[in-house]
Each structure stands twice: as structure tokens, then as C-alpha cells.
Amino acid sequence: MRRREWAIAAASLFIAGLPALAQDQTGLTFDDTMPSVLLDPIIVTAQNRQEDAQDVPIVVAVFSAEDLSARGARSLQNVTQYVPGVELFDDRGAGQPAWVIRGVALSDVNSNNTPPASVFDDEVYLGSNVLAGLSLFDLDQIEVLKGPQGGLYGRNTTGGAVRYVPAKPELGAPLTGYVEGRYGRWDAGGIDAALGGPLGDRAAFRIAATTAFGGGWQDSLVIPEDDQHGDRDVFAVRAQLLLAPSDALSLRFKLGFGQDQSETTLMRSLAPFDLATGGPCAAALAGTPDPETCVTWYNITNAVLTDGDDLGFFPNSQDARGERVLSEPINRLDNEWVNSALYVDYDLGSAMLHAVTSFQDYDGR
Image (cartoon, rainbow, N blue to C red; front, side, top):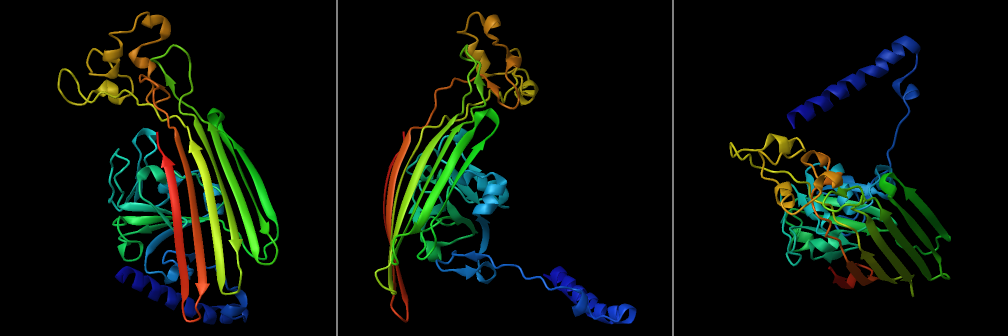
């Protein structure tokens, strides 16, 4: 605080001296030469109402749709790398991402355990880590709130809260839409699309969908053929209808469906123990486990594999980056979900009633 106050004071003295200096040398004043710059305010809904981010007494990181697109963020998991003090625990991409905000989290593979850093999808609380693997499509913004939020968001927000705010239908807005495609390394790609517009003077709609495919980047040395394991296979669609029977009352209906049949990331054989010293195995840490000195997964597979020379089953066949691994490709997701919600806003004159009712059906397999 002292350093900041001194910096502000020094800057004030410097700026105060500029007009006189400019007047002496050019005959112009400071205001005549320096244009004023006004930054657009960042509007957040961290306290369940629209406010300037500078007026909110919460440490909050905000990402607009343009910000996420520029960073190539395609899921909530991708956002964590851009927020200081925030991490993500996701055991090999197993579909149970647990947010770690300021070191507070529950890293557990049990999907029934509720996280202390919770995710809210359009104001609806997601009560399990498995529900937090959302695809980012047709959104307005994402807000990451740091620190305890129990006073406003209730239980399970000891570490903080993550708010996913999708784009909504708007009354009076023209018919607009877009279709975006992407393609990258390892044949990873996808398509995003949205369409929205008016339905008369008192109604509006918005429909959005996303799909992601490909991206498999790992080859398992346990099977003979060259495979590209880790492909994404995701599809989701969301439809919204906004009705405004009067100036005081508005109702928004939302219905969504999605499925995720992506392959999970394969483990890389990394032996922690050296048979001679009992300490970390240097060869394994370098990415090429040595069965003569390390206790490795290769020690197990080598006992049952034959004709290993022809198939390339050597310790140094595995690379340190995990593109070629010595684990068996047996894991994949088979998740499907349906969610719906009703949002009611009623202007009482001296107060505003805002009610949210939701239903979620999630099958995680």
C-alpha cells in the first residue's frame, strides 16, 4: 500500500509539472496536446446484478467471448491457465475436473463428492465435478470469483465460484447468427453455430450448438497398430425462448442436451523408484524407463509380451512428452445430459423478483 501511494503521489507531481513545461516550450497547455482516453467499463454479474467490475468488492477475473476465442479456450478447463491463483485437477482428463482456487479444492475421483470451488452454469449450481466439463460455446462471458462466496452463493464455495454466462435472446434485436469452424494439429476440429432473433414484439429466441472431434495424439505401444488415442467426441445444443407478456414481467426458458464420448488421456510410464538406491529413477525421469534399474510398467508388460523386437516394445520407445506410451487404451467417456431451466423476472416497483428453477439429468459412464 505504501509503495502504491508513493507511486501515485510521484505521478501526480510529474503530471502537475507538465503543463508549465509545455507552456514554456511550445506555448501550448497540457490539455491541448494530450487526448483523454476512456476505457469501456467491464460489466460483471458476480453479485447477481449488473455492475462495473471496479465497484464489486470481490477479486474477479472476467473473460469475454472474444477473449476466450483469441486464446483458443474451448472448455472451462482451458480458462485456468489464464487466472493467477487458480489451477485445475483432472486426473488424466478423466472427465472430473476439480477447480483449485487459492489452494482450496477437493481432488477426489468420487463423482458424488461436492467441490469447495463450484461452477455455476447460467446461475444454476453444478453439484459435482463431472458436471463442470462444459464446452464453451455461444457465451457472453466467464467470471472466476476468488475467495469465500458463501454469503451470496451458499455452501461449497469456500475457495470461490466460477460463473458460466451464455449469450441470451434479446427483445428487439435483429436476426443474427454465425457459423465458425476450426481445424488444427492431430486432426482436431469442431464447429460452432448460433442463431437468434425476434418472434414478434414480445418474444425472442436463440439456438446454439457445438461439436468437437479428433485431436488424438497418443500411440499406445501395448497394441501393435499405430493409434491416435485421445480423440474428442463432443456435441451439445442449447435452445432459449424469451417471453415478455408485459413491461414488468419476463420469462426465459432454456433447454439443453449434450454428450461426451471422448477418449481419456493415457498414462506415461514413470517409475519413481530405483532398484539399487530406492530413490527416484533417473532414467524414468528422463522419459526412457530402464527395466534393469527401475520398477516400471514395462517390467509387467514385458513378462507377457512376445516378439517384442518386431512390435517395438523397448523402454526407450516411450517418449518423455507422452506421445508414445506403455499403457493400455481402455478408458473413454460415455456421458450424456439434459438440462432445463426457467428464469422469471418481475418488477415490483420498489424491488425486483428474480427466480430460477432448474432440472438436470446427467448420466456419467
